[in-house]
Amino acid sequence: MTDFLIKTFIRDSEQVHDPAVRERYGVLSGVVGILLNLLLSAGKLCAGVLSASISITADAFNNLSDAGSSVVTLVGFKLAGQKADDGHPFGHGRLEYLTGLLVSLVILLVGLELGKSSIEKILHPEPVSFSVVSVIILAISILVKLWMCLFNRRLGRRIGSAAMAATAADSLSDVAATSAVLAGTLVGRMTGLAIDGWVGALVAVFILRAGWGAAKDTINPLLGQNPDPELVRNIQTTVLSHPQVTGMHDLIIHDYGPGRSMMSFHAEVPIDSDIMEAHDVIDHIERELKDRFGIETSVHMDPIATNDEQVNRVRAQVAALVQVIDPAMTIHDFRMTRGPLHTNLIFDVVVPHKCPLSDGEVAARIEKAVKTLDDHYFVVLQLDRSYVSGH
Image (cartoon, rainbow, N blue to C red; front, side):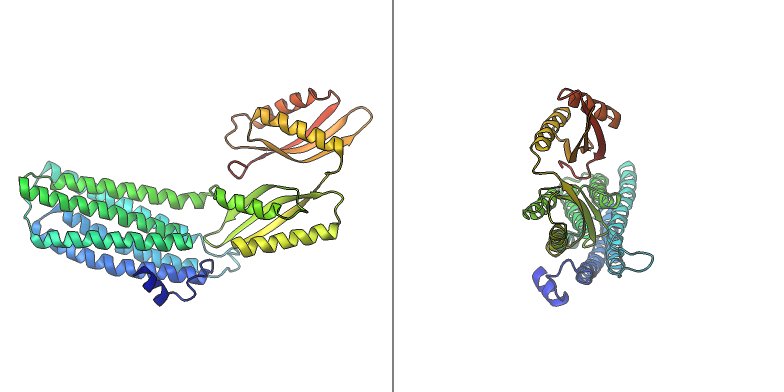
């Protein structure tokens, strides 16, 4: 069914990095969500009124809020698909993350309201009427919501959408919630126990948990999260596959919304390289990364000495000393300037964020360690905090 809907309603469905195609995926997800949730809400509301069940009625309003969330998702994808303008040169892609955040906030609000109503029902229980029609509606709802979860999860993974991932998580929580309502209805019928309020509270917990998880998934890219380690490895492999590049560092990836990313890094080339040839290689790497990963790329070229035996030996020694301080610490842009009284060792140090030492403590330890190699060495270093985990 999912493949049929994609082929029928999404033109150029394979071009998932195209903002226009992403918008079509969002419209499909939103329209399907609105229609199905409205139908489920209407059915459950009738069942809840007929049986005087707070848990079924609450589940109906949960589906109604899901329909509202689908409207938000639909509008969000339409807005995110807008082209860049003078005020927003990187486009409007982050609106998709804001859409996911709004959906998660709606989920949390519904969970809180349901929890409040359920506690009141626990404190003041009322009789619940059993209805075969209610049981059938709840069973159908579970099957529909399970399909919606799989539908949005597949679409979300296909285009890398946090908003769709939040919608899929919400649908899965609805499956658990409605299952709990159905189980509570059957248990109440068979035992006569007044557990409707308790089941409603359990449903509220499922909803709150799903809302909190969805909120985290959308807040992280808005704040700026660590890039996918596999993406980083693939970028490094691509860059270092060019023999003219001997190393890379200071990789930074800026996320302006799905399909709208930019990155920059420093590429090390031998100092005796032909400048025009090296520049041509760097240009080629920028185009290759854009074509392969869909990321606009800016590369800074760093010339380093590769044929000086003493420089290579001292660089290796300093790198080993730095890793004694922290195994994840690395150096780059290493240079030596020799003078009559002392030799300057000039280099940058990449310090992982998890390193407990302050910048001053790191610099002092490195300077002390380098002095053990030769008392005439004078350290001139620049400390950089790593933007990539495990870099």
